[in-house]
Image 1 (cartoon, helix red, strand yellow):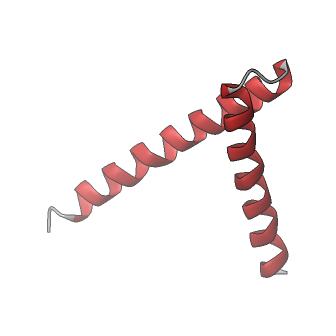
Image 2 (image 1 turned 135 degrees about the vertical axis):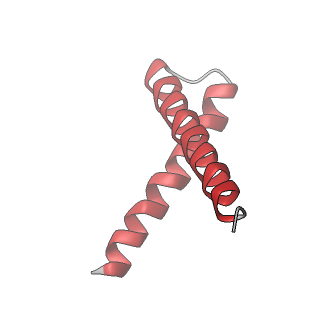
Length: 59
């Protein structure tokens, strides 16, 4: 079951990356929407990771 969930997450991540590249080359509207969502999710994860690493270094 865990393998299935991880495979799904990997497929979503790869699909999002493909949409980002396709949107940069002028893809259809739905691709630009998926690319925007992917970029936003990446920014949120990046910010949460950097704040987590900062709070962990205060020890």
